[in-house]
Image (cartoon, rainbow, N blue to C red):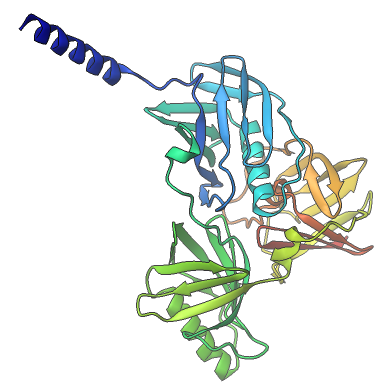
Length: 372
């Protein structure tokens, strides 16, 4: 009996110790589970390692899914700021590079944190955040696929594309834009695993050919038909509704630029370019013109409301920021449009430039500028 009592006491102490164990901010490996940019969730790309973070009291270190990084930090009373981060310089094309740019850019803007159980949330202002779970990626649920990019309807059973007026969709950070073949479309999409749910899709009201009108109606009806199953096969995106009807899209050439070998780009220096088009459509109305200029290794201009600037380098035809973009803090009108220029610059866009025209492309968004 005495031995049994001792064993029961030891077991109770073990359980108490296990229940009292707490995850701490420092000396814990944190693995990214969610990234939010401008209040919109950003899908973590499938097949790419998840970013990690570890704090030791003086330094932060981790991985971006491609490169590793390390730097100093200061933590005090829920406030957290990171110093300059040194990273390895492995080339990270495609989704891996975009994830790395967004992640490091948000890290450099973190101002506070919240620790709740095994969840760590880092806040970069009021609209951006990084959410981590304690432990390695192997212990976390698998990341969903990413559909970010521009997709052109090429087939399927739900809609037969009208030659020369094929619908297209561009996805970025939970938002969509595109065309039904004639009218422009805007809206939202929520991707959970391999299921996409489209929010209300707004459309312009241009007069279109009868066949295109029918195509657009069928296209919008399909998107609104409830949660859609998402599948990726090579460069094709397949959406299927609950009745088995499908739409098949192929990735546009602009979205595939990230996989090409860089050919080298020369950027016009000391000239101002003004935004003229977004994904082939008219640029949205903004409080000020959206501008872009390059001079002495720096990029700057106006994002449509605030001024911005930062250092950059060119890697072939890809623009890579070498420091976080800084911006002014002007209060912007609520009705002022936004094209997400600074976010796109942080996503290592490909650049095409001529004497009078310049194009930036990343994550399915294409911004076209003309010389002022």
